[in-house]
Image 1 (cartoon, rainbow, N blue to C red):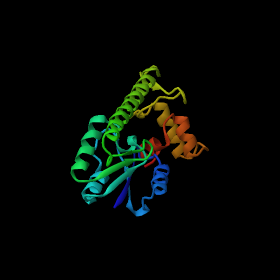
Image 2: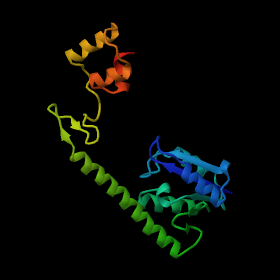
Image 3: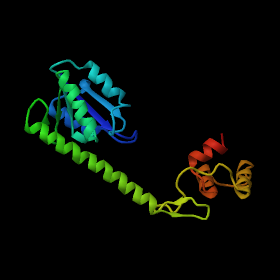
Image 4: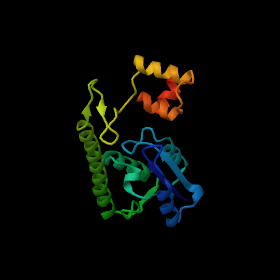
Length: 198
């Protein structure tokens, strides 16, 4: 049996491209397993774990690329070894690696695993440098370069002026909608609905 495994790290990310590549390869739609979880470890990968339990000797798992399978050299090697022990092979379309092949395939797998991990570490480093470069306001909150507004969680307490404006809105004295009210108070819409207008 040929199975497909597609993965992204965040809920808002899309799996369409990966699924198309697997379908083009020949994986049946009903055999594609989808997961939205970190690529660093396999610890929280419940869909992947169920897939491995479902697979039998002689089965094949197809991934669009190595980084969709894992971004950690040690974890990748460990998983491939476990799958080999069960008689399950893995194919990475982008890198043209098939673990049923010996010799050069294993070498390529180690190289691409290392590259994928370096890309992940580089991304984390870029994120940290971008975070460190943000300016702070007088209250010590980081200011977004894109919006010019504080980032992170909204303050738990409203200022007296914000409370005054809120009361005017509730009394119908402010002829604005809730989105405009959120902008006026300097809070997000979700904060407004969750904490103020519930």
